[in-house]
Structure formats: structure tokens, C-alpha cells
View 1 (spheres, rainbow, N blue to C red):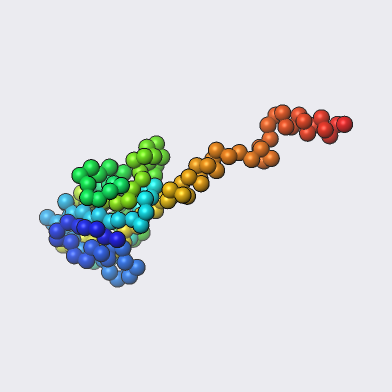
View 2 (cartoon, rainbow, N blue to C red):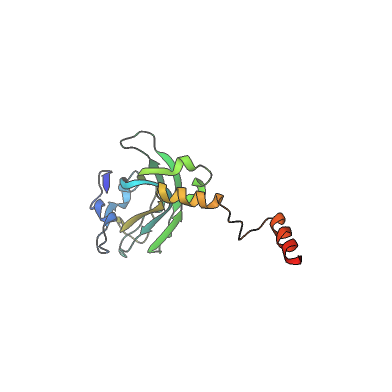
Length: 174
């Protein structure tokens, strides 16, 4: 759910909607730099990717964005999870946030995500910048623990030790 957003945004709740004809609007000049929004996730998530959808053809889009995270809200201490640069002509983009997080696992468990716009694309004479959808992808704590446990568990039937192979060889000879 959308928790809060900066002033000057119109229809910010649209970024979480399933309707492709709805989108968030921000004035490009004097509005994008410093624009931000905060969303709340249903549960803590190990953030791995963020997805952006921009389907409005007669507007500019955000160029440089910061992705910040926190386990609580409100907070004055947002953790920088990543900085991304969008393609001005791509409608659907997926950004890998997890590559930075895999080395700092404690940093990437978040319940709240703040997206801060730093710059926008200067396309034609568009006065509005839009974003149709924001998506967060990652692992819940339960899935993360299952994956980590699976990495540690080695099925020796599939990867036998040298001693196992020698025992099987001895048994086959006799």
C-alpha cells in the first residue's frame, strides 16, 4: 500500500494499481527532483528486484532513482539499496537490487520502500513525468531460510564422497 508521497504528485496510488491506463503524474520541471513515495509491503522482504512500468507515451519518465529501505516507518534512517537509471524508451524494466544485497544481507530486509526521483528524461517538450507501476520482488523470510538451508544440505546419494565410491567398488568386486 502507498504510505505517503511528496507534494505535487497526482494519482500516486496508481503505481500499485492493476489498471494500465492509470499512472502517477509529476511536473517534470521543478517537480521531479525531490519527488518521492513510500510503500509498505505486506511482510518483511529480502528485496532482490524492482520493476518499473511506464506506459504513457506522451510524457517523460524518471531517469535516475534511488531505492531506499527500512524495517519500520516512520524513520529518519533509510538504507540505500540501490540507484538505478532507466531507459527512456522502455515500457517495462527490471532492476537487480539483490546483487548489492547478497553481500550485506541484513541491510536488504525491508518492510518499507522509499523511491526518490533524482532526475528525469528530457523527451521532446513533455511537461509531465509519469510512472504507471512500481513492483518489488524478493523473498519472504520463510522462503529465504528454505533456500539457505537447501544450499547447506548436500544429498550424498547424488554427490558421493571418494570413500563411498571406494566402498561401492569393493562391494562390486566381491
